[in-house]
Image (tube, rainbow, N blue to C red):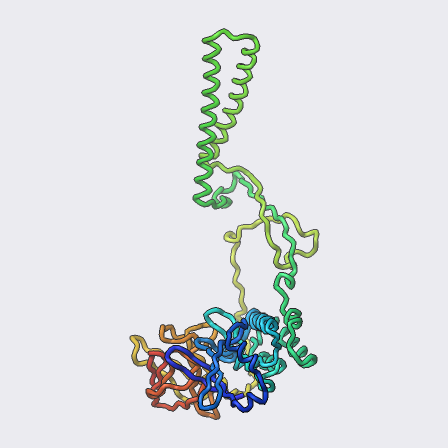
Length: 444
């Protein structure tokens, strides 16, 4: 399947040419109608155009980047790999609703696109049998794209490679097997209660153990103290009222007993409220036990079950720091000679120098491939300018020569005033002028 890239004023397209005669032989009318309708979730939007007796499939990619272009500089992490296959699963389920299978889905890292603004993936559907990449080929390609330092991602992609070789086709059950929900994979670690005792010693400065409180907590405590003092005054007022009644009126025996009881209870409650209110208002602290619920993340903190329990809390800021080092000079050992990779170390003696900015930007082209854009996690060199796309262009080595590729950028890439075609290699020499977005560079 041959395809090219085309850009008009507002859209980027991946264009596939299809001969009408071959279409009559292979059918695919129903698949084309479903594809054009845009009702299948996860497929690239497509419109079919008839030009000079030939049929062209225009897949709208706009600001999307292929999986290969996105992860060439920085490998795929496990979460990104999982997202890719879960989006693939949703797409397959959506196809099945229209009685369509995986036949026609192009499993190739050049034809699976990532929407950088939404962080989801779109798949290319070409409704003619025999012209698509297989799932086995896709897993082998992703094996090269996965971050070698991500052990979990490598383990999963190796398992998928084995699955694809033995069973030969992608299945939704396979994705469910290798990409379970994180809640099912991660073991739930029981929560343990850790009690920390804070003691106040008369021989030790209380500031060393003073618990930091927020302004809100202090305000709430003072407010509670004021309420307690006010309550105590009300109780004392009640006692004064009962005494005034006893002195003014003649009471029966039952009324005398009740009045005495009321005064006694009010006196005790008022004293307690007064003491509590004064203590809270003044902020006086007392020895107390604070319970802290902690999630134990590593079982190595405790040797066995008997070690779970109370531990002595130490102030880390009071612990002296010891710096140790080996000052003995050692004889330098000669390291083994490594073979240079021409893709990594490319001696072309060409450097880019910006000339229309207030501060000169210098980009060395000694290590290739080198991707330029403003999305830090996807490029090798970040240019923070509004005219630069997230993944804008890439410098590569092609048979010993320096080449430049525009990666479907919005504002384009230019060499000596001529706009480069998307995804097409253009050779660069010393003395050329390169414009990336609105930033001009001289090649020296």
